[in-house]
Image: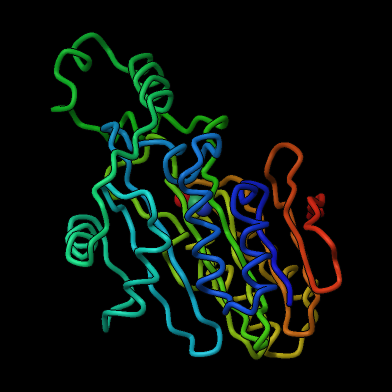
Length: 305
Ligand code: GLY
């Protein structure tokens, strides 16, 4: 067994380890851990502690992928909902679809008994308005929100409010390799924006035969490069985990135009190797790791590309 997640996973990582140790399957164990991350306001990129869109509305994204069946559930730009990873898991189990977004995702949540949450944390609301106010002219302020948002959306790409996420990857007791994600997405994003966290192949991909990958930070890049799927495909073609990640990074490096920033790649293969690589993100990137034989999870440093 093996569990890998980014540093923001701290509220739920040990809980997931305990569930895996108890013999739970990987997806329910990870979804339960991510629900704790989503509920923790100190995690400033996911669920209740995350950041709203340009209108001050929380729209969260989340996903799950079963690497044995390659079934996927994902939800994007969901309002009024904190546990979006659990909602994505319900999409996977109850619907013939892969992805629901916006009002449709919330309608489904109502139908299956999810409570309506108020996910806008008071500090996020304060910072959202202070930052927005600085960008607006007196006329824009007077007419907000009935103004064009695109110029503001382009102006606010605040590096302190990173496009972070929580990502969990595991290999469970049945050798199933699975992935789960959750995020509030890019702070001050244009309403309706989806990041890579609900997009299979971009922000996550899992195949129990070969391995899995999941990304944090700039979804606008991994969606263009198909990063997570590219890594698992390279494993399938017989490349090592480090070679597979290197190919994906070459593709990220080769992007031009559009919005370019940093990406952190988390990946593992079916033989139990793992790697976490920082491509152009500022600061000290760390991740959580646990595997059979370890007494407790460890917070480790990512490698820099
Ligand atoms: N990687 C998270 C996002 O771009 O929303």
